[in-house]
Image (cartoon, rainbow, N blue to C red):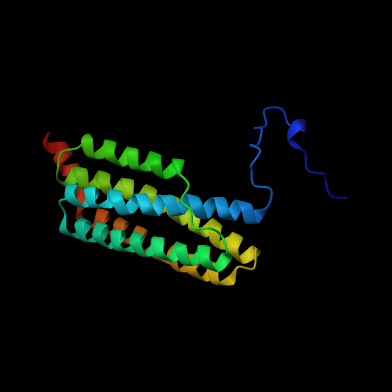
Length: 187
């Protein structure tokens, strides 16, 4: 006999759900889509600032590539909305808002050059990891819900996010991190 799931009233310290809370996987999928849609749109507006603040040509190119990818991801998400019959609507993503605030803080706390570049890479990788987790989850939800076209589109984006993350690691390890460390020793 399977143990019965507890309801909210039975768990001390449980968070009370809002009246419009998701009651099924489809609603949770919709919430996630609207969240990442907002996040990708914000990235298309904030990445140009990172490009202006990066000094390494490799990093500048990677950020420009990420910008064009983010624009494509917005378009792809619109196709996901269309194929699933969910209204394309962006809902504020608290996680991405926090990551962007942190990124701005890192740029303010570092001098232009290798140290700032290392900070930008760190910030970008946090964004990538958030996106990888989100797209991986949405892909799994889409598969479970039988939304095969949406799952295919989300898998494409997930793959691109992983490649960008690996490229950023390569740039950091090729020279930027060691040059940033050397700058610390000189001061």
